[in-house]
Length: 270
Image 1 (tube, rainbow, N blue to C red):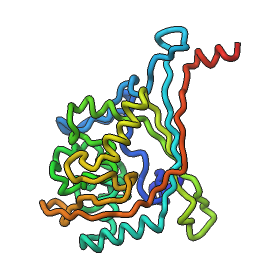
Image 2 (cartoon, helix red, strand yellow):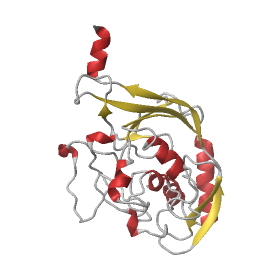
Image 3 (spheres, helix red, strand yellow):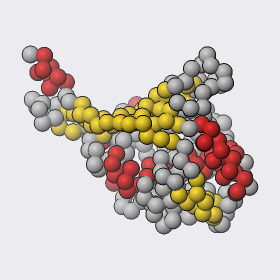
Image 4 (cartoon, rainbow, N blue to C red):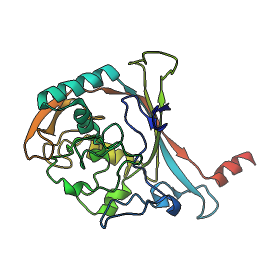
Protein backbone atom coordinates (compact mmCIF):
# COMPACT_ATOMS: atom_id res chain seq x y z
CA UNK A 1 0.00 0.00 0.00
CA UNK A 2 1.21 3.50 -0.78
CA UNK A 3 1.93 5.58 2.33
CA UNK A 4 1.64 9.34 2.79
CA UNK A 5 5.15 10.59 3.49
CA UNK A 6 3.99 13.02 6.20
CA UNK A 7 1.47 10.89 8.10
CA UNK A 8 2.50 7.35 7.10
CA UNK A 9 -1.20 6.64 6.54
CA UNK A 10 -2.38 4.61 3.53
CA UNK A 11 -3.37 6.50 0.38
CA UNK A 12 -4.50 5.31 -3.03
CA UNK A 13 -3.09 6.38 -6.41
CA UNK A 14 -5.28 9.49 -6.72
CA UNK A 15 -3.71 10.69 -3.47
CA UNK A 16 -6.64 10.30 -1.06
CA UNK A 17 -6.36 8.94 2.46
CA UNK A 18 -7.87 5.48 2.48
CA UNK A 19 -9.99 3.48 4.91
CA UNK A 20 -11.37 6.41 6.93
CA UNK A 21 -15.00 5.41 7.40
CA UNK A 22 -15.24 1.71 8.14
CA UNK A 23 -17.92 -0.25 10.00
CA UNK A 24 -16.59 -0.92 13.49
CA UNK A 25 -17.46 -4.21 15.17
CA UNK A 26 -15.69 -3.96 18.52
CA UNK A 27 -16.78 -1.63 21.30
CA UNK A 28 -13.14 -0.80 22.05
CA UNK A 29 -12.79 0.68 18.54
CA UNK A 30 -15.83 2.95 18.76
CA UNK A 31 -15.22 6.69 19.14
CA UNK A 32 -17.03 8.83 21.70
CA UNK A 33 -19.66 10.74 19.76
CA UNK A 34 -19.41 14.43 20.60
CA UNK A 35 -22.82 15.41 19.24
CA UNK A 36 -26.30 13.91 19.52
CA UNK A 37 -27.59 12.34 16.31
CA UNK A 38 -24.06 12.03 14.91
CA UNK A 39 -23.13 9.31 12.45
CA UNK A 40 -22.52 6.09 14.34
CA UNK A 41 -19.95 3.74 12.73
CA UNK A 42 -20.95 0.78 14.95
CA UNK A 43 -21.87 -2.38 13.05
CA UNK A 44 -23.39 -5.71 13.92
CA UNK A 45 -21.56 -9.02 13.35
CA UNK A 46 -24.53 -10.11 11.23
CA UNK A 47 -23.55 -7.50 8.64
CA UNK A 48 -20.67 -9.73 7.60
CA UNK A 49 -21.57 -13.15 9.05
CA UNK A 50 -24.32 -15.59 8.23
CA UNK A 51 -25.02 -19.14 9.47
CA UNK A 52 -22.92 -21.74 7.67
CA UNK A 53 -25.32 -24.42 6.38
CA UNK A 54 -22.43 -26.89 6.42
CA UNK A 55 -21.36 -26.05 9.96
CA UNK A 56 -22.04 -28.17 13.00
CA UNK A 57 -23.83 -25.56 15.16
CA UNK A 58 -25.46 -22.14 15.12
CA UNK A 59 -22.11 -20.65 16.10
CA UNK A 60 -20.51 -21.71 12.82
CA UNK A 61 -20.66 -18.71 10.51
CA UNK A 62 -19.60 -17.95 6.97
CA UNK A 63 -19.30 -14.79 4.89
CA UNK A 64 -19.29 -13.71 1.25
CA UNK A 65 -16.27 -12.00 -0.27
CA UNK A 66 -16.18 -9.68 -3.28
CA UNK A 67 -12.85 -9.26 -5.05
CA UNK A 68 -12.62 -6.48 -7.62
CA UNK A 69 -9.60 -5.21 -9.53
CA UNK A 70 -9.95 -1.53 -10.42
CA UNK A 71 -7.46 0.34 -12.61
CA UNK A 72 -7.04 4.05 -11.83
CA UNK A 73 -6.15 6.25 -14.80
CA UNK A 74 -4.11 8.96 -13.14
CA UNK A 75 -3.69 11.28 -16.14
CA UNK A 76 -7.41 11.11 -16.99
CA UNK A 77 -8.31 11.84 -13.36
CA UNK A 78 -6.09 14.91 -13.28
CA UNK A 79 -7.57 16.09 -16.57
CA UNK A 80 -11.12 15.80 -15.23
CA UNK A 81 -10.16 17.56 -11.98
CA UNK A 82 -8.66 20.49 -13.90
CA UNK A 83 -11.57 20.67 -16.35
CA UNK A 84 -14.18 20.68 -13.58
CA UNK A 85 -12.20 23.29 -11.65
CA UNK A 86 -12.02 25.55 -14.72
CA UNK A 87 -15.74 25.23 -15.48
CA UNK A 88 -16.79 25.95 -11.90
CA UNK A 89 -13.98 28.47 -11.35
CA UNK A 90 -12.77 26.74 -8.20
CA UNK A 91 -9.42 25.37 -7.08
CA UNK A 92 -8.21 21.88 -7.93
CA UNK A 93 -8.35 20.82 -4.27
CA UNK A 94 -12.07 21.59 -4.07
CA UNK A 95 -12.67 20.00 -7.48
CA UNK A 96 -11.07 16.76 -6.27
CA UNK A 97 -13.12 16.92 -3.07
CA UNK A 98 -16.34 17.27 -5.08
CA UNK A 99 -15.55 14.00 -6.88
CA UNK A 100 -14.73 11.97 -3.77
CA UNK A 101 -16.64 13.82 -1.03
CA UNK A 102 -13.46 14.40 0.98
CA UNK A 103 -10.26 16.34 0.46
CA UNK A 104 -7.10 14.30 0.01
CA UNK A 105 -6.33 14.51 3.74
CA UNK A 106 -9.78 13.10 4.54
CA UNK A 107 -11.54 16.36 5.46
CA UNK A 108 -15.25 16.02 4.49
CA UNK A 109 -16.26 18.61 1.89
CA UNK A 110 -19.74 18.70 3.43
CA UNK A 111 -18.21 20.45 6.46
CA UNK A 112 -15.81 22.89 4.83
CA UNK A 113 -14.53 24.16 1.49
CA UNK A 114 -10.87 23.67 2.44
CA UNK A 115 -8.78 20.82 3.82
CA UNK A 116 -8.17 20.99 7.57
CA UNK A 117 -5.12 18.76 7.81
CA UNK A 118 -6.34 17.14 11.02
CA UNK A 119 -4.64 14.01 12.33
CA UNK A 120 -8.00 12.22 12.52
CA UNK A 121 -10.42 13.37 9.78
CA UNK A 122 -13.96 14.17 10.90
CA UNK A 123 -16.38 11.28 10.50
CA UNK A 124 -19.41 12.12 12.67
CA UNK A 125 -21.24 14.18 10.05
CA UNK A 126 -24.65 13.37 8.59
CA UNK A 127 -25.58 14.29 5.03
CA UNK A 128 -28.89 15.66 6.33
CA UNK A 129 -27.02 18.93 7.02
CA UNK A 130 -26.75 19.41 3.25
CA UNK A 131 -30.17 18.37 1.87
CA UNK A 132 -29.71 20.17 -1.46
CA UNK A 133 -26.17 19.04 -2.28
CA UNK A 134 -24.81 22.58 -2.11
CA UNK A 135 -21.70 21.51 -0.20
CA UNK A 136 -21.13 17.88 -1.14
CA UNK A 137 -22.47 16.87 -4.57
CA UNK A 138 -24.98 14.02 -4.54
CA UNK A 139 -22.72 12.18 -7.01
CA UNK A 140 -19.65 12.37 -4.76
CA UNK A 141 -18.35 8.86 -4.15
CA UNK A 142 -18.71 8.73 -0.38
CA UNK A 143 -22.22 10.22 -0.53
CA UNK A 144 -23.31 7.58 -3.02
CA UNK A 145 -21.97 4.52 -1.19
CA UNK A 146 -22.78 5.77 2.34
CA UNK A 147 -25.77 8.14 2.15
CA UNK A 148 -25.79 8.95 5.90
CA UNK A 149 -29.42 9.98 5.99
CA UNK A 150 -30.31 10.90 2.41
CA UNK A 151 -31.82 7.62 1.26
CA UNK A 152 -35.40 6.43 1.66
CA UNK A 153 -35.94 4.51 4.88
CA UNK A 154 -34.41 4.52 8.32
CA UNK A 155 -30.81 4.99 9.36
CA UNK A 156 -30.62 1.38 10.50
CA UNK A 157 -31.70 0.10 7.09
CA UNK A 158 -29.14 2.36 5.44
CA UNK A 159 -26.39 1.34 7.84
CA UNK A 160 -27.13 -2.34 7.31
CA UNK A 161 -26.25 -1.96 3.61
CA UNK A 162 -22.64 -1.26 4.59
CA UNK A 163 -19.84 -3.66 3.70
CA UNK A 164 -16.59 -4.38 5.52
CA UNK A 165 -14.07 -3.32 2.91
CA UNK A 166 -10.31 -3.27 2.51
CA UNK A 167 -8.14 -2.42 -0.48
CA UNK A 168 -4.48 -2.48 -1.40
CA UNK A 169 -2.76 -0.67 -4.23
CA UNK A 170 -1.04 -2.42 -7.12
CA UNK A 171 1.44 -1.19 -9.72
CA UNK A 172 3.23 1.16 -7.32
CA UNK A 173 7.02 1.10 -7.29
CA UNK A 174 8.72 3.51 -4.82
CA UNK A 175 11.97 3.22 -6.79
CA UNK A 176 10.45 4.62 -9.98
CA UNK A 177 10.47 8.39 -10.39
CA UNK A 178 8.13 9.85 -11.48
CA UNK A 179 5.50 7.29 -10.40
CA UNK A 180 3.60 5.41 -13.10
CA UNK A 181 0.34 6.90 -14.31
CA UNK A 182 -1.00 3.78 -16.01
CA UNK A 183 -1.29 0.12 -15.07
CA UNK A 184 -1.95 1.05 -11.45
CA UNK A 185 -5.00 0.76 -9.23
CA UNK A 186 -6.49 -0.99 -6.25
CA UNK A 187 -7.40 -4.55 -5.36
CA UNK A 188 -10.72 -4.10 -3.60
CA UNK A 189 -12.16 -6.69 -1.23
CA UNK A 190 -15.27 -6.61 0.92
CA UNK A 191 -17.15 -9.02 3.15
CA UNK A 192 -20.88 -9.07 3.73
CA UNK A 193 -23.69 -11.31 4.90
CA UNK A 194 -25.69 -11.06 1.68
CA UNK A 195 -24.27 -10.18 -1.75
CA UNK A 196 -27.62 -9.11 -3.20
CA UNK A 197 -28.75 -6.96 -0.28
CA UNK A 198 -25.38 -5.31 0.27
CA UNK A 199 -22.73 -5.11 -2.49
CA UNK A 200 -25.10 -5.52 -5.43
CA UNK A 201 -27.66 -3.18 -3.89
CA UNK A 202 -24.98 -0.52 -3.38
CA UNK A 203 -23.85 -0.81 -6.98
CA UNK A 204 -27.26 -0.98 -8.68
CA UNK A 205 -29.52 1.13 -6.46
CA UNK A 206 -27.04 3.75 -5.28
CA UNK A 207 -23.81 3.92 -7.33
CA UNK A 208 -25.37 3.58 -10.80
CA UNK A 209 -28.74 5.17 -10.02
CA UNK A 210 -28.88 8.59 -11.71
CA UNK A 211 -31.69 9.74 -9.40
CA UNK A 212 -30.12 8.73 -6.09
CA UNK A 213 -30.14 10.25 -3.56
CA UNK A 214 -31.95 13.07 -5.37
CA UNK A 215 -33.35 13.59 -8.85
CA UNK A 216 -30.68 14.46 -11.46
CA UNK A 217 -27.85 13.64 -9.05
CA UNK A 218 -26.06 11.54 -11.65
CA UNK A 219 -24.10 8.34 -11.15
CA UNK A 220 -21.21 7.92 -8.73
CA UNK A 221 -18.44 10.31 -9.81
CA UNK A 222 -15.76 7.64 -9.35
CA UNK A 223 -17.38 4.30 -10.19
CA UNK A 224 -20.25 5.41 -12.40
CA UNK A 225 -20.39 5.64 -16.21
CA UNK A 226 -19.96 8.75 -18.33
CA UNK A 227 -22.75 11.30 -17.92
CA UNK A 228 -23.90 14.50 -16.27
CA UNK A 229 -23.63 15.15 -12.54
CA UNK A 230 -24.94 18.10 -10.56
CA UNK A 231 -22.21 20.30 -9.03
CA UNK A 232 -22.36 23.33 -6.69
CA UNK A 233 -21.16 26.45 -8.51
CA UNK A 234 -20.13 28.00 -5.21
CA UNK A 235 -19.64 25.85 -2.13
CA UNK A 236 -22.61 26.22 0.21
CA UNK A 237 -24.70 28.31 -2.21
CA UNK A 238 -27.96 27.14 -3.87
CA UNK A 239 -26.71 27.40 -7.47
CA UNK A 240 -25.73 24.26 -9.37
CA UNK A 241 -24.37 23.24 -12.76
CA UNK A 242 -25.05 20.00 -14.61
CA UNK A 243 -21.82 18.85 -16.19
CA UNK A 244 -20.51 15.56 -17.51
CA UNK A 245 -17.24 13.87 -16.65
CA UNK A 246 -15.33 11.13 -18.45
CA UNK A 247 -14.62 7.87 -16.59
CA UNK A 248 -11.17 7.46 -15.09
CA UNK A 249 -11.59 4.11 -13.31
CA UNK A 250 -11.86 0.80 -15.20
CA UNK A 251 -12.91 -2.61 -13.98
CA UNK A 252 -10.28 -5.26 -14.70
CA UNK A 253 -12.24 -8.23 -13.39
CA UNK A 254 -13.46 -9.67 -10.15
CA UNK A 255 -15.23 -12.56 -8.50
CA UNK A 256 -17.52 -13.61 -5.67
CA UNK A 257 -16.29 -16.10 -3.07
CA UNK A 258 -17.83 -17.96 -0.18
CA UNK A 259 -15.81 -17.97 3.03
CA UNK A 260 -16.93 -21.06 4.99
CA UNK A 261 -16.68 -21.56 8.73
CA UNK A 262 -13.61 -22.97 10.44
CA UNK A 263 -15.61 -26.07 11.37
CA UNK A 264 -16.36 -26.79 7.71
CA UNK A 265 -12.70 -26.37 6.75
CA UNK A 266 -11.60 -28.70 9.53
CA UNK A 267 -14.04 -31.31 8.23
CA UNK A 268 -12.27 -31.23 4.87
CA UNK A 269 -9.06 -32.29 6.60
CA UNK A 270 -10.63 -35.31 8.30
